[in-house]
Image (cartoon, rainbow, N blue to C red):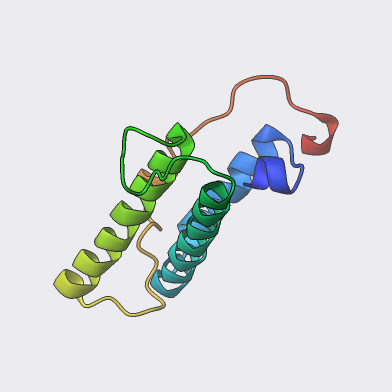
Length: 116
């Protein structure tokens, strides 16, 4: 999202995404999932209106990106529910603060002048 939407270089987008994930709270993650679920629903409705196949009724149909996005949303919501129930997390808890969740990603390649 940062690379395409904000026009950032790959290295800068990765760094910001890692910081975002590290600082993400349970409440922010819940809002993020809800917003993206609404966006997926809107895209699905537009595709249906345009005569495209209904990916919601047949997993074999639809774009791979949509199936992946839906799977990530489902897993994200399940993670929040289970973690809240098991650990009684507060809305301000940062479930991805541990480097385990974000430090393993790296960008290799040319760095643009905006990264210097």
